[in-house]
Image (cartoon, rainbow, N blue to C red):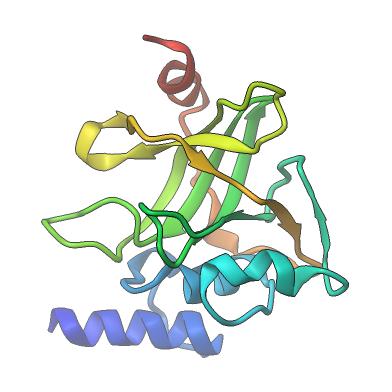
Length: 177
């Protein structure tokens, strides 16, 4: 049954079909999830998105709701990672909705809504970040490089952010020791 639900959700995410599964029921890789959640029609490994967007989409270093944040490949992220900004809380704190980051029930691939992303770059330019991680119930200890944000031309998914996102919790994640 669980495999059927995952396939149904993935089918709805990838095809834009009429399946009734929620975007947040998705289990799989970050790329098809980010494409469905943002409307940015780029394919291939996450680390390739930044260069692929050049000339096709506006890119920059300021987070906006619906923008895709691109993590380049690194030792910890050999295929990179992409996530979608669901909420801008303040200049250095945003919320993401993404897939395949934290483990849930011992496995990766699940979607997570409105998790904290904190800019820790020395120049406040979003080139280095910390990401909320379920296993630590807060920001993980790792700092990740970021290429920047890809700004989609379409409308972001309705479920990108929740009804009552925890802005205060995101600020506490970012600034409380």
